[in-house]
Length: 189
Image 1 (cartoon, rainbow, N blue to C red):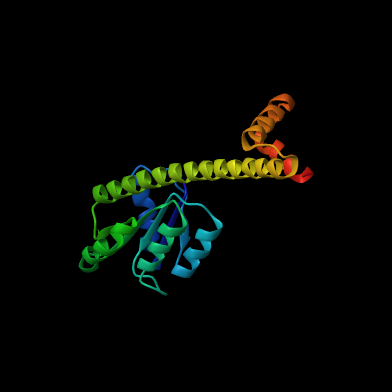
Image 2: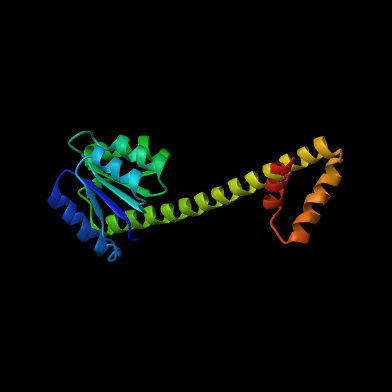
């Protein structure tokens, strides 16, 4: 895991978390740092991260709303570090949204396990996001071909089946993708 965002008001805690990441097997990580929720949100909109580590509290907010924003807007694993008295309640409220809460103080083993869980979640979400993009592209291609078929039915009096065969045959004959042929036909008709 290389792309990590550490959000902590305390710079020494940020350095300790960086060292803990190395101990957790993330030695290649070169984390970005944010000292507030607002700064972290700016970084999240401009960059992609695999792990967002939030050391609560932050100077401008507690950190739970930032965690929810990170879960909603990224595929990063989100780990919220909170005091023991607040961690249980936060875990119950944020857990169902995909935020992992770890009570402070924690052992290096607990931290390493939490980081591994976040990494696994991030990898899974990244795969799902990629599959979603692939499916959206496929749906767009199907819509484009359907629109071209409708144009052929309306303007050339073909049946839907004839229009489908026409597009398929033209794509094969010209060795071009169906969506390219469909786009050209829509432009002509």
